Amino acid sequence: MKKTFLIILLVLFYCLSANAQEINLPNTGAFGKIRGGDETHVNEVIYKIPYDVMGDHVLTFEVWDMDIAEEIKVYINDQEVFVVPVIGDEIWSTTQTVKIPDIRLCDDNKENKIKFDNTDNPPGTQWWGVRNVQLVKDKPPANITLYQTTTDKDITIGWDDTNDREKYPQIFFDFFTWNIGEEKKYLTGRTQALEITFKLPRTGLYTFYGRACDKVYTDETRTCSQWSHSALTNLDGTPFGQVEDPANPGQFIPGNWMIYGHIAAPTGGGVE
Image (tube, rainbow, N blue to C red):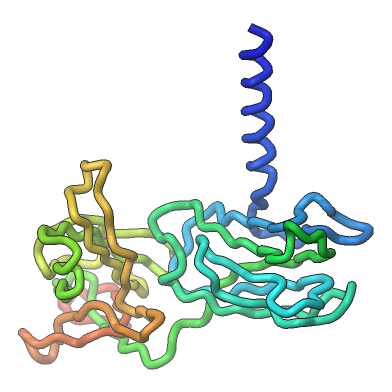
């Protein structure tokens, strides 16, 4: 009984310690192995983003005692995004800025994590630290086509499944629209078709998101591609999706674009 109780305590201690490693953003505190400060994060500092994030973002931070090349690397959801340059011995750096494309973030869960990893520790015990970590929205990408329509008009959005067919013989698509001003999801749905037609629920500026999956949403073993979106600034610059051109029925405007929906006037026309 005592042995079992000890094991439970050890497991509980491990879980609490692991959770303590993750720091919720926003947080301006200094963490790492800092002379005269925190020394409990010898090899890494992990920040958790406890909220939904959509669109491109900018990560800013300061590091301490960065005096060895490639000593500190930054990861977003275990993908390396930045190597901190050499700053100096036992001094704080100026603000470092890293642009984080939307494709790096997990749009459908709240477990996005930012990791600062000291690659020398262990086996080394180098001094180092990070502070003033912030993740803020980037300005909208340039060269975006703005598709304007009144909220009582049908909108048709289509996409290409050429790449997905190679991975998934039978494809099930998930989609939603993201209201940029309200930071809310609307029109969440699923389909096996290559286009959908809908009306915007309210006025606002929207980005359309979609992804491909190999099984129906009720199957817990399903695997899915990363979310793509209509204003995609993908790592290779590939646009996603196309929207029907209201001036040329049957023709489509390819990405990159956003939808601007506005209230319909009583006559049926649009008002800006």
